[in-house]
Image (cartoon, rainbow, N blue to C red; front, side, top):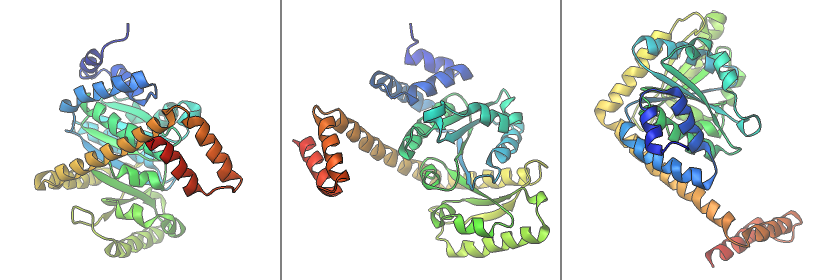
Length: 325
C-alpha cells in the first residue's frame, strides 16, 4: 500500500533523501491521480518551506556551472548549510534524466550526506521545467535544505524562467569571451545579481582583464534589478578553490540585505502570483485537450493550417469557440 502524503512528508522531514526523491517523482508525474496527491503534499509541505536561499546558476555551455556548484556547495556545507542542487535536464523526456552525469560532474558534493542532487526534467517544454522546479524547491526546503541551487542548461529562455523562482541569480562567463558575450542575451544579463568569470586561473591575464573590463563597462547600461542594484563582476577558479569564499560572502550579503529590507518577501510574493497564473494556463490547456471531440477538431484544424486552407489565428478561434461552447 502506498504511503499517504502525510506519512511521506513526515519521513521527508526527517532528512530521508529516499522520501524526498519519491516526493519529487510524485510531483513530476502527469497522471491525474498523482497530480491530486502532489497538490495535497505541497499544501502540507508549504508551512515548512521558505527558509532557504534560492540561487540560480546560469551561463553558456562549457562555462563550468557544475564545477562551480560542486565547489560552492561544498563550501556552503562547511559553513553549516544543507545543499540541494536541481539541474535542469532537457533530455529527460527521452533518457529518464541525467542524475548520474550530474553526480559525476559534482563528485565531491554528491558524496556529502548534507547534499541532494536531482535533475529537473523539461518534459519537452520550458513551462514544465518552471512548474516542477518551483514545487521541487518547496519540497527540498521542507526536507531541511537551506540552500537550493538551480542549475540551468545554458543561455536561453529557461534562464529567464529561473529568475521567476529564485532569490538571486549568478551569470557565469569565461575570459576571452568576446564572441560569447555577444551571445549572452541582454535579458539574461539584466536578470543577473552577480556576474562570475570562471576558470580565472587558466586564462591569460590580459584576456581576463579585458573580459572583466568589458563586463564592467556594459553593466551601467543595464537597467537596475528590482532590488535597485546592478551586478558586480567576480572572479573564481573552482578547481583551485580561489574566489569561492568571496563569492559565498557576496551572495550571503545580497540575500541578507534583501531579507532585511523586505524585498525578498515582495519578490517571492510576486513569484507565487506568477506561478498561479502559469498553473491556470496549463490547467486550461489540459481541460481543452480533454474536452470530448476536441482531439478530432484539433487534428482537423492542424491539417487545414498545414495545407494553407486556414490561418493559425482562424484555426485557434474555431477551437476556442468550440471550447467556450
